[in-house]
Amino acid sequence: MGTANQARHHVIIGSGVAGNQAAETLRRRDPDSRVTMITLSKLPFFNRYDLPRVFHGERDWRKLIVFAPEYYLDHGIGLRRATRVTGVDGARRTLALAHNETVHFDTLLVASGASPYIPAELAEYRPLMHGFASFQDAVAAADALPPGGHAVLMGGDTTGLDLGRTLLATGYRVSVVADQHLLWPHEVTAALRPRYFDALRGMGFTVIDAEPRGQMSAVRAAGAGRPARTLVFNDGSEIGADIVMPFFGIAPAIDYMLGSGADIERGLLVQPDLRTTNEAIYAAGDVCQIWSDADKRYRFYHGWKNVRAMGELAALNVTGAGLPWVPSQDESLQLCADGRLHSPFWEYA
Image (cartoon, rainbow, N blue to C red; front, side, top):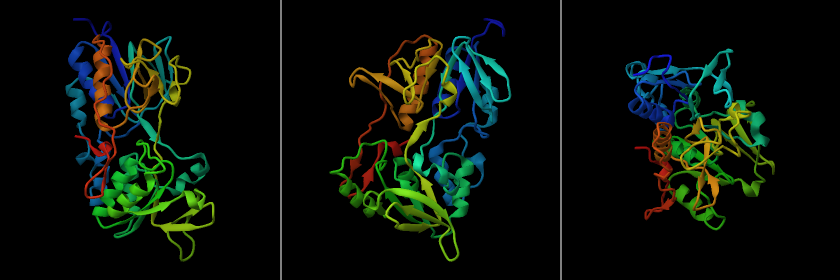
């Protein structure tokens, strides 16, 4: 058994599904190592798929977390919360933190997930939108939505529609403003859009096609005698609501990896073993594009099952397994016999 000074230091950026699965696997396979998890989140690991519970009245964050703080102490995993990584030096194997600390690593797993994507033409209106990426975001949205209130889901990706199903089930009105991001990350052809619109309407959604209105152009705050929020289209038409929420897909949260020496396209480019172009750096989850021999391109794999499997695989390969990526999730959008839609990205068990 090595001493503390000789122990390998595995650092994980991100505390979501991939990061926690990797930490658990690293601790099991390399018990003498140091494992440190660094996250922007103020809370320990929680399953973001549980966030809609706030619309059922849940306000105790402790009931949403997967692992209590004691778990990390008991398993010898260093958890550094509310900590921002500002840069990674792949050659020196160090990362810089916002408060000027430098952390050395022997292996680094980038599992920082993704941030909600907002089109550039709408970015200035972000303060008027309610996000849904954190517990605090979810509580703020729930507090702003009165009983029986009206929520507008902009874009209509699968995360938004999953939330929308909860809102409908709890008595709220939900409008989906569908643009090219409808049902992202599924690919929706123009020919099938009318069928999907009908299916969503059958599920209780009000569906508004943004294309004939010239797409969305602005969000406005309440004026005298007006709704709390107004979504404006390029043709001048408007929709009023209590809250508007952006669901245009996601963008990998990897700005701090610029200059790290690892190749980046939209995400970190990794081989099937999840290793980047730097042999000490791996990536897992929504941050990475994995080389697919079948497709002859680097591609993203989304969904809870895939992200969890990537965390496991990365840790296995960090500790010498040498295994290739095999997708764990069906990605087919289903139009059910009852006319409803079902996405496998709504499955997380």
